[in-house]
Picture 1 (cartoon, rainbow, N blue to C red):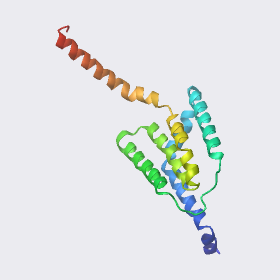
Picture 2: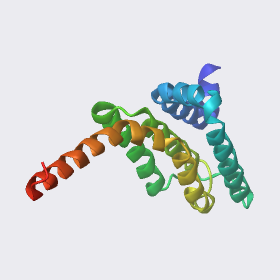
Picture 3: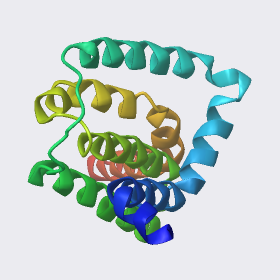
Picture 4: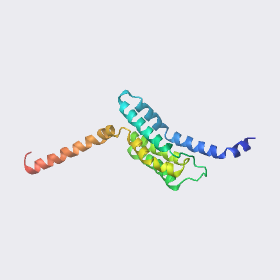
Length: 167
């Protein structure tokens, strides 16, 4: 009885395992994204995210049909694999949560591409890029890159002033 159930639902079980593994891998990003967007100061990002999501859904509404032949495009698989590898590099070398959250959004779209028609998937790539970039990168750039850039600028100005003879 169990073997007949497994035979009938083999594709659904494989799909469920892939989706479960994806969300288990990105579980910390899901929690971080939820915590970040639940803060009171980030309502403008929620609004931008909802507007982008609405545009995406309207774009995808046209001729939206599931991929019934079970074949996954090589490009979609490469995007999915690239997102996972990019996130692994980020985790081991940079460890910026915002980059991982963007990788998760793009990876979710690549995962969706495994189940919808290729043309429908291609139509939404630009919008998903906008959704991924709607995360608050400016705060992190200011925090992690702003101070070193200011120090570098001060060093250059000090060198120029010393060269001119003002110091």
